[in-house]
Length: 329
Length: 223
Image 1 (tube, chains in turn brown, green):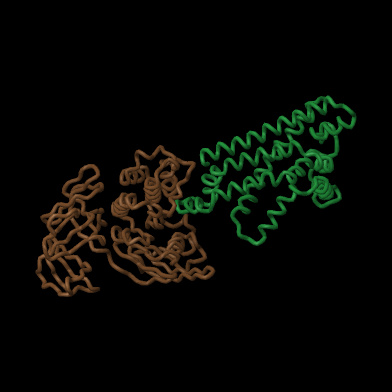
Image 2: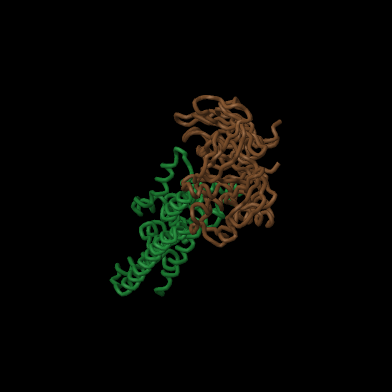
């Protein structure tokens, strides 16, 4: 029996049918990715018990949730549009679920601290910016001590800068509280930064799994307000965020990087790391490179189609650099 | 007979009718706001009928329904020992039917504007349906509740046709303000008619101003 989330969902609307069956591991962030109208939100709603007619079976850690109303499942749901209660303050919004799910004051305080919500507590949701409202919505879902977090495109409608601000908070919350998350998105950027694995969906059918985007892991060696310094072997990398010395952070490579066989020289790039080629013929058209003792598989188009020999010195240049707290083991 | 008797009787009738109407209308309005049942338009039309029916038509059918010879009227006589027709209790029941749309429609609009989204959010946070209704839907609909209460009260204050059909004109028992004005005009007592009509006019204007003021404030605060 699966230790994580298992579901078998079938829904039929006019001109659209959803048939989805999968087992989701109970760790880290699993992205559910597909184009608009592919059935992502319906699937997530069915798992939460909001589409009772669509459920064939839903189990979590061996516990049968099939047919249970949302109130009787241990899910935390973050909606696309935040859905904060406008007649309650931020503090009351956070308490709403916490009280009903038997979470303690300490649990709520931990969420307030992790998401830096103290200054927002007395405010009305109508006086929050878009990014703040999403942060509160995430906090509200976490404050009721969910067994799994279901997030339905929680960054939709925010500009690129706000998304970049919020993604580390999401990663930190999921990793810090050890809650597995199913994260609906069609953004490659969000998948690259947040996802430990991705389940694809198209036209109501699951299309298969893919692993985490390439990333490097390092230890936090210094943390000042708003900045974290991470050690990657001999390199020191500064990324925006809130961290604690000793934590393991991931630096996703994203898709804005360049691999070269010559030193790049002076550039405006955020970071350049020395590497060596470990395997030019890694699966899926990738090559495996070694950076400070860590091996990562990255897509690399060889200049002139000539494969370099293992051991060749390489330089990995990242245009932007960002980091997130890695999932705790 | 004092001029205050019909005024107090009308206030008592309007107050009691409003309280009962709010209790009855909430589940009806909630159901209408959330159902996709095919029967919904028929129920909506039924609750809105008093808006378009001549009060005499409504009053006539209510008179038949409440007469001691009917099932309802007969049962009432057996239980209470008195007839529903030409009684204060009969007036209350008639007023509930007559003012039903004035309570149901503002509540239905308010519940629809809360939307299923908020209820779903509450459900995922551990609230039962009743809990979510009480703590989310009702506070968010407070303007609709106030509007329903004020309009029901004001509409009952001014009813005439139904009251005359069902309650007649019994001083101290069924003679409400509108009937008193009618009687005063019939007996050429224009001074009484002026006092009561003017009072009702000022009251109605004040009530409507309060409703519109509440709506304006609600729009400003966004709730």
